[in-house]
Length: 91
Image (cartoon, rainbow, N blue to C red; front, side, top):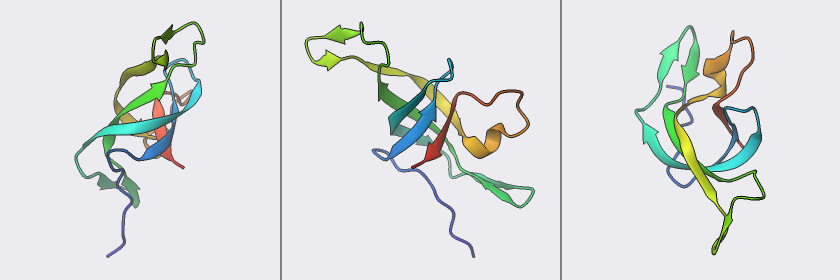
């Protein structure tokens, strides 16, 4: 049996936001265990948190964190899209 990489809560990943900005993010939730499709393993969906890329978004703790990346696909599951955005990939 081949080992499949499953993200873990607290793991750092690369992510592309809905506006196509690449950010470093942390996994806050993992949904399921992934699945096989056409010989490829599709990792599960995840929720992510990352430091805002907008320098004006500051508070007493520093740059604010963004939490709107929920149920995010792995990069492999964006193949065939006109422009791949809103996904994560392992570092």
